[in-house]
Each structure stands twice: as structure tokens, then as C-alpha cells.
Image (cartoon, rainbow over all chains, first blue to last red; front, side):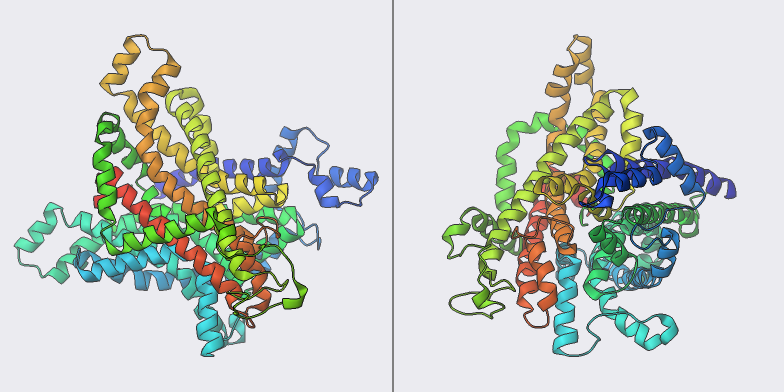
Length: 313
Length: 308
């Protein structure tokens, strides 16, 4: 088991290196001189040269890459061009809202989506199933920011049920914190619920064709036991896999949702950095999000045996 | 995002497509057309089809639909509500919201179609190379793994922020995150048909590599690529709208739905329509493309359809 985890961790290193190389390449190989973009239109040649030196742009490209990666390994993501703050500490400051939003969304999604998927599989082909599946296409199709504004408009502005936008940290009390997270979590869950409900339904339907389900039925297990104990347990691995893969869209969703609801998290930080062309911050955040995505999928892999003891490493 | 569900088993799906000699079934085009038209009898599919027709017509005939110049500024009539003159009111620059929503369809469809063709072209190119030439395979696929590990919106944002938001750079930025999935799909089809007897026969007859690839192998990718294309199309429209909404997309003077929503944010409490009308147009378009995409998949790839 430990050996397996170690092996999988090692296997993610090439992917992480590739991500770092791709991110590096995006900055260096795109047309235009990054130093010139950073310096702005009215920079003097001297200022330009200084920036170029400070960014190491005067070195050969492969040395730049090596230097950049060796700094990364030391946890040095560079400093913001705008504020001079280290990118890493900026990330630490802004992590709270994003983490709360992402975790809240995953919890809400699992609570809503898995029962929906089980019910849809159980009533396969019936009206209830078709309704759930139609709603799931709707969930996929309506973008997070459209859902977000619809929720704000009807629930906050018209009905006054929730604060319109904004964020309060948990340290200021649970209620103000939770109250401001309800709508963002709901908005972001839409896509994710649709995704997980669909995969739950289809994996259960697939499992229902297996021999052990017939055996379970033959020995007189009720439909509920068959569905929950036999089918759902065996469908856990694909569901878990999709939750892992869905983290990529969750991350994109967090970026958008934070903008809609004015949450001062990492997503807002990305957008602020893009608008200000603060490249070290953009780079650092893309790397961070990609690494989180890779590590979560590693975690999912490692969790397989917990849900399906037939899988052993 | 819906694409994720389908992309999970993309390789499997491709293998099935490759094993079932789809190319040989080409005379069954009549069957495919019959099934596609037959699907219209279902309520949601019909509604989706009607929506798509309306969107396409709006894009094609925008000037004939009672619209005004979508970029004409009129400071005298800022932020108006619904009136006979301005069917959906006006925005902060006095521009006619209805006209901008109609013209927005044009922008969305152009961006969607452009990104789809571009990603299929690049995906086909790299996928065939990776699938056929072993040496290139390792390199191409490692790069694709790297690109795939970066959440698509972030990758697109980074590309746009570096290159500045012209239409072309936004198009490229939307396309690049979509390419790896197409490459994987094409590659897996090529890998699976390589061992088919007719391909081995062609090789032993001394068929030259370009002919072999173009005539015997690439046609097998057509059906899965059409299915994949519908996903890319929806994803591209969504990414463009998202980028523009975040202020990192098309230049603000272009009337795209995302840009309209982005500008409407400041006046949302006063005139929610500034966000809701383009938002509804965007959601309806994505919904119809997604529903019709599922229909296309069901018809072209019946095995996959049973699963989901």
C-alpha cells in the first residue's frame, strides 16, 4: 500500500514537470516581450533592461527553465509585480473563501447527486428518471455565472433571503459565514450535481447487469438492499473517479463564482492578476491549481481500495 | 463540463468505434439521417432543435430582425427599461440590448465553430502522428498530459492575458485546452485500427504511409470526431462567454454575451435584464447544443449511448 502510494507519487512528478514546462512555455514562447508587457508602454530602455535581468530573460532559455524549476522546488513562486509580496503568501491570504466554497460544493453535491442518481437508476426509463436526466442536462448547460445572477436576483434582491454578495471569514461567527456561502455553493453545485448524478445512474445501471446482483435478488434481497448495498457500493469507483476529474471544472467554477459573488478568494486573485497583468501571480496560481488537481486525483486513486476491497495494491 | 462524462470512456468509445467498421457502414447514411430526424419526435429534442434554428437564424439574419446598430452609442437614452423603441431596453452606453443579444449569437457561433474546427484540425494532426509514429507518441502525449492537467479556464485566461484580447488570440486560447482530448481520441482510434486485417493487408501491399493514413485510417475517426465536435462546440461557446465575463475575453466593443454580462454587473441591481437576457440566450444555446449533441452521439455511437 505505502509502496503503491510512493510509486503513484513518483508517477505524478513527470506530469507536474510537464505542467511547469507548459506554464513556462506559455509565458516565454508567446509573441511579445514579457519584459515590455510588464514594464508598460512608457518604460525607458534602461527600465526594460533591468526588468529583463531581474526576470533572468537575458539568459538562454533552457537555463531560464532550469532556474525557474529549481526555484519552484524551493517553494519560491516569485513576487507580485504589483505589490512585491511573495506569491506564496498571497495564496495563503486568499485561500479561505476558495477552500470553503470548494469543500461546501463537494459536500452538497455528494449529498444531492448520489441519491438522485440512485433514484434515476432505480426508476430507469420512467418519468422520474427522465425528469432527473433532463434536469441534469439543464445543470450542465446553464453557466455558473448565469445561475449565480439568477439566484442573487430572485433570492437576495427580490425575496431578501440572503445577503447579496460578499464574504465573512469563519472567525467572525458561523452564521454570517455560512449565510454568505449558501448561494455561491448552490450556484456552483449545479454543474457538479448534474455530472455526479449522471455517472451514479449509469454506473449503477451497468452494475445491475452483473451476476452478483442476480444472486442477491435470487436470495431474496429487497430492491433497496440490492441498490444500496450491492449496486451503489460497486459503482463507487467510477463515481469517485468522476469526482476527481470534475475537480478541474470545479476549479474553473470557483474562479467564476468568486467573481459573481465578490468572494475575495484565489479565483478573484487570478482575475485581478490577469487584469493587472501580474504574471508571477498568474503563473503561481495556475501551477497551484494544476497541482491540486493532480494531487486530488492521486488521492482518489489511493482511496479506491477503501470503497472496493477487491482492488489491492 | 458535460463533456467530462463522455470523455471518461473516450478511449473505450474510440476503440469500439474503431472495431466496429464504421467506415464500411457508410452506405447506411440513410439510416443515420432517418434516426436523426426520428429523434425530433421527442419533446426536449424538438425544443432544442427549434432553439438552435432560432440562434442560427439570428446569427445569419441579425440586421433583418428589427435590430439597430449593436455598437451605436446613444448617451441620451442610457439604462432604459423595455419600451417599443428598445425592446429589451438599453445599457449604460445607450446601446440597444435586444440588438446586442441578437448579434451576440453571431459572435458565439463564430467562436464556437472556429474553435471546433481548429481543435479538430490540430487534434487530428497530432493524434495521427502520435498514433502512428511511436517515437512522437511519448513526447506528444506527455505534453498533452501537461496541458490537460491545467484547468481549461485558467489556461485560456493565461493565454489571453499574455497575448492581449484580439479575436484570434481568444480563439486560440479557447482552442488549446480542447486539443488534448481530441488528440487522445484520434490516437486511440488510430492505435486500434492499426491491427485491423484490412490495414495490415494495405501495409503488406506496400501502400505508402500518407495514403494508408488518409484513406484507411483517418476515416475511422470521423464518427467519434463528430460526436466530440459537439462537445467542443458547446465548451468553446461557454469558455468564450466565461472569459469575456471575467474581463479577459473578446475586446469589450464586440457585442458578445459574455461581454454584455460583464458590463451589466455594475448595474445589475438597477437593470437585471442587462445580465439576464444575454445569460438566458447563452444558457438556451448551450442547452440546445448539449441535447442535440447527445442525440448525435446516440445515433453515431449506440454502444456508448447505452451506458449513459
